[in-house]
Length: 161
Image (cartoon, rainbow, N blue to C red; front, side, top):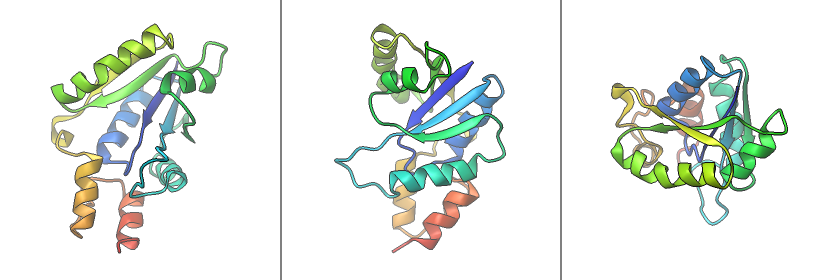
């Protein structure tokens, strides 16, 4: 089974890492797809996010980290090892708010892209962790080490302005 885990991952958090580790327990291959919105200036450049996530997931077998180029459903097809593409898209969800946001996307992924979306509920101790909260803490120059993998923490601490 090939799973695509798409997201902006700006930055990649311990919640994202937990989802990746749990998916690796059931999938033969996990592709972490880093989305880049050219209209937005993120905290970390997309290419740097790819490199940092590779470092953060180096302990996991069968993980590939790539920069996504288009719609998630199209990328699922393009990135698969077979003509059918990735078997599924996985998304982490922290609350019913995430489910409400992800539900229409999951329907379109299935109806138009032909690929199912599986939601992985976050562990309760990580439910409050989000990339936007980490970005805010970085801006306030607060300790983020408990919320992000060490590679991400080092990068963000070394590059604070």
